[in-house]
Image (cartoon, rainbow, N blue to C red; front, side):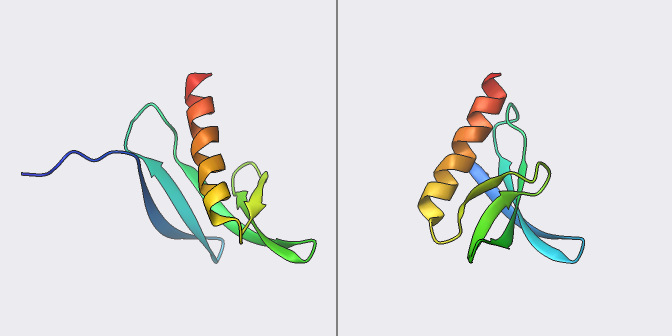
Length: 78
């Protein structure tokens, strides 16, 4: 028997020849987000592939993960 899953799952994919990370919520109320990396102003940044919106510098991994989850929750509540 499978155990209940909570939170988020991730899966790598390739879009346009670039590796991206899909953040997929287990809860169907939320939409998945596709995250990429880009080099901007001398640093690597996470960004939302579909909106082009920057998220956080790549070396701020915990803050980036928190921001991604918060934005997913806010979008679902809207």
